[in-house]
Structure formats: structure tokens, C-alpha cells
Image (cartoon, rainbow, N blue to C red):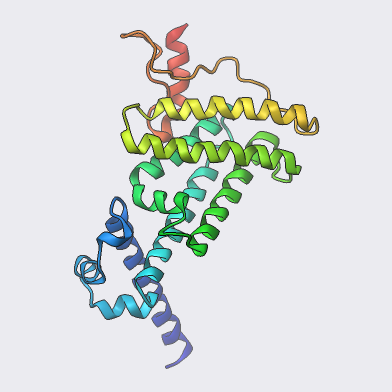
Amino acid sequence: MNRSQQRGASTRSQVRRSELIATGRKLFANTSYDALSMDDIAHHAGVAKGLIYYYFKNKRGYYLAIVEDSVTELVTLAAASGAELPRTERVQRTVEAYLRFAQHNEAAYRTIITGGVGFDTQVQEIRDAVRTGLVSTIAEGSYGHHDIPPIARLALLGWLSSVEWLTLEWLEYQDLRLEIPRDLMVRMLRHTLNTIEEFAPECPAPPQDLSWRPYTGLEPAGSTAGPGPGPLEDIGRGHDDAEGGSR
């Protein structure tokens, strides 16, 4: 086999592996690890069970590959926060992307946050990587760089831990529309950034956006303010419309 043929075979192999991961993400989106056997997975994927073993060695390897792929998407979505938008709206985009990811990948999200079955060191490493990526994203959006002192990193990790468990509770009941936990988390982050400034004056909190109003669910029926930003891609426009309508 010449080099061109080898590259072609390698590309097909990568595509096949990606297809299996995509199928697994759909299967495990709202189904726990123990609920699906390898026979079930192979049946839904339309492949021989041996092909999954070939690429991932075992069921756990397959599941970890799915979780890692999900994590990559989560961090990428959170980082794509729209540099052209005001800071508060950028944070809104980040938090909304986080919540929507958790909503549409509930089982994988629970695995990431709770550490898998028992104490799974590999899942713990994946979770730590997620936290590092998200803290860097928030620091970059708040301060323009991600090289922050330990006290600031500790405070942001504390905020992120509360976000993780608030999200788990919201997923459990989902009796609040997404905009409410989103803006609750944004408001909590504002308080965290103010506290960081007290302990680390070299990390001043970004100027507050006085035009921003969180959606609390207490707005009167028929209010022209609406429920805040709509779909993720329309956050900037939707919020401007809402503010304009309330004037």
C-alpha cells in the first residue's frame, strides 16, 4: 500500500470512528451507561459488535470517547461567546450554551459532573479539563486574559461548582424556563467578580452593564420586556429588542 492509499485508509478510519461516536452520543444522550449493552449499541449503529471493539477496545473505552467528544463540544460552544457583544451578553451566551448542552446531553453531562460510575479517575480528568477550559473562558471574557491569580481562579471555580449543581437540579425538574437559571448564574457571576476585586485589586470587575435586566419569571403577564434573549444565536438582538420595548 503506497502513502496515498494509507492516507485514504486512515481518513476512512477516522470518519468511521467519528460516525460511531456520533451514534453513541445520540444513544447515550439520555440513557445511562448501564442501560445499553454492546449488542444494543451495535444494533443501533448498524455494525458488527467487533467493529466497536476494534476502535474502542471495550464499552468503557467507547463511552469515554463519547464523553470526551461531548466535552470538546461543550468547551467550544462556551468559548464561542461573541467577542463583538457587550460583556454581560457574552457571559449570557456562554451560560446559555452550557445549559443547552446539558439539556440535550443529559446523561453525558451527569457523568462528567458526578464522576461516572463510582470514582472514575479518567472521567475526573475529563471534568477537570472542562473546568479549566470554562474558567479560562470566563477569565478571558472578564479580564481580557486567562492568566489570573490563584484567589481569582479559586473564586471562579467556586462559582462554576455552583453552576454545575444548579444545572443538575434544573435538569431534574425543569420547572423553570431556561432563561431563569441562565440569568441567575449571570447575576451570581457578577457578585463573584465583585468579590474577586476585593481580594485581588489587580483583577477589577468589568463595568456593570446598567441596561441589562435579568429575566426572573416575575415579569407581569403581557410585559413588553419579554423573556429576555431567545435562541442562542439571537441573544444580542433579542435583548436589544426587549430593552427597546420596555422604554
